[in-house]
Amino acid sequence: MVLLAVIICTVSAIVCVSMKGTICNPGPRKSMSKLLYVRLALFLPELVWASLGAAWIADGVQCDQAVVNGIIATVVVSWVIIASTVVTIVIVFDPLGGKTPPYPSAGPGHRDSLESSQLPSGLKAAATGVWETRVKVLCCCAGNDDHARAAFSSSAELFSAYFSDTDLVPSDIAAGLALLHQQQDNIGNSQGPDQVISHPPGPSQEADLDAELENCHHYMQFAAAAYGWPLYVYRNPFTGLCRVGGDCCRNRAPEYDLVGGDQFNCHFGSILHTTGLQYRDFIHVSFHDKVYELPFLVALDHRKESVVVAVRGTMSLQDILTDLSAESETLILECEVQDCSAHKGIAQAARYVYGRLVNHGILSQAFSIAPEYRLVIVGHSLGAGAAALLAIMLRNSYPQVRCYAFSPPRGLLSKSLYEYSKSFIVSLVLGKDVIPRLSVTNLEDLKKRILRVIAHCNKPKYRILLRGCWYELFGGSPENFPTELDGGDLTQPLLGEQSLRTHGSPAYSFSSDSPLESPTKYPPLYPPGRIIHLEEEGSSGRFSCYPAAHYSAKWSHESEFSRILIGPKMLTDHMPDILMRALDRVVSDRAACLSCPARGGADVGVA
Image (cartoon, rainbow, N blue to C red):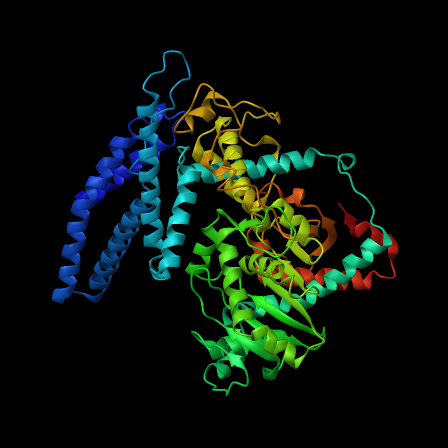
């Protein structure tokens, strides 16, 4: 009881002190470090006490059953708290915090520039090592081959470069995102209809949009099927297990080169249910999953007379490591494009699928069965990026190739490859989906915006977080969000913003020399092909897409996705089941409105 009383008092003091000041004004919280060390020291007797409780349970002391159950629950909770605290410290705690020196002033009295520049270089290497250790701990099940080690290093360099010049904790980032969402909605509400420039579509553009939407609606089934049974059961929670359960125990004699993997029969059963194809229509199915090596399938689509290659999106730790290998890599292509650079991890994954399709004769086998069919490559998320690069690689051998990329990542292609891909790749984006807006360049822009809005905040962090949670759950007016920013777009940061950076310089400008802005390692990258944007009309709720929601479709320029938008649906709009539901709705609505040209013209715009 004494130990618990001391812990409660310490935690209460931590709560009271942490509520003082603002994010950029830590002065009132100067005693926080001492309280945290006291709380950390109290973990030692707490650990001893939890061990005694575990030993007491192991001895099997005879007591009242209610007392025994209470002690067991207390011991279990104590160990869970201790373990979660240790894991949090290992992941979040920065052992280099406060060690990064400020950049030297560029004045005539500046000396020993070589020695001062060597120290940040050493700290940079140390920070990269810390992040690499974190990534290895979190992705310990991803393997330890050459590809995995390369992905660990790439991920560590990305995280180190992104967080090396800021002094933010996770709750600061959460507060910044909450403020950005309210600021973003406030700016959106202040824009009148006359500020939105729209161009009515021509008949050919609208007909082309209808045709491509119908193709997207059809081929999205293949992109979803590539995820296997987990997505199928998620989409059909009551009947999915029953439908694929029999297939999990069934053995089939393969007619073609069907490659297995974990729960292959379960995966294949869900693929049949999702696509509606027969077993004999599949040429190759692979669920081999490693870093830079994605699962994919090859099938004959007799309805559209096409050979469909569907690449799976992110669904494992190996896939996440592939996503995080975000530096640029030069591709060797047989096309007249000057700058052939792309996302390294996705390029490696596309090269793996290309090798399997071409070197193993899979495509040759498919076209020997259906020589008059055309090649169509599809994918969702990471699979969309790999499908786009795969289509570019196969373009010379299969000039009629088409690619449908659903929710592809923005940071994928160089500017020249983006322009080159417009003639044969169509991308589909839903709402405020964060992935089609996600690139290293956009992440750097988001960091600057977070620093800016936090620096202008005049309220304690707990009030920002509480108001942000209320705003996300129940909405409200964004006009009185707790900052002093009056909508002005300042070109220079205030002193508070400089205090959030670990190396403030007198010559600091808002276009900082961040490592993420390196034109060689992290150049600006773009999404693939022409882009169809589905936007929800009206408001049907703060979170998931309700069946009654209606959507408008339009051709959009890549510049419309050059900034990450904050909102409650920025993650759910990326889910393949939500995208399929939106596609069903927009295709059915447009089919119903063919006889209503007035409304159809209002619903469709071309940017």
